[in-house]
Length: 212
Image (cartoon, rainbow, N blue to C red; front, side, top):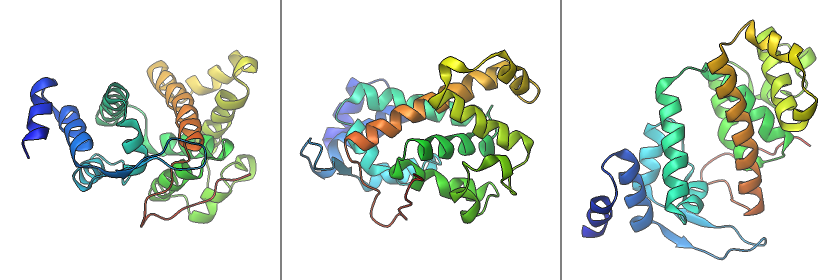
């Protein structure tokens, strides 16, 4: 198909441009933007690329983003670059993302990140009880701190004092704290984006209800 090549000729070269070209030319979709329906775009080429990047099958959510290529491009560019650098340990990142998604009751995001947290050594039952962090038998002190901080960023950002950051600095660099904070806040935005547009979990993926 010549159309993806033409799109890539307009955009700067690279993986991001390839993903945009695939996303805009090969999605088979049904679209009706309303609170009563889900925006869904599906493309096998893009899905495979996303899986190779470690993000799994997020075709429905990415398909919605592809309606606005600048958003699609910059979101994926940021996420893939952060993943490539790997400054923030994956376990702490996934704990934060699942905790925030549970707080915001985003079943789409919980469904995508809970399996990754299981890979990091927390059982399915443990994931379900993640917000009960204070007495959680599968979490160590740093894990609990990450959940506590995730709750603070999501719910209590104006009431979080220096003591919290003193505790974080005992385990994380300033760069890691900045990235952790950004990822928590960004995840909250993605939760709201996915829920208001009622993005559905992809066929074949296990849907997990977010905690009340």
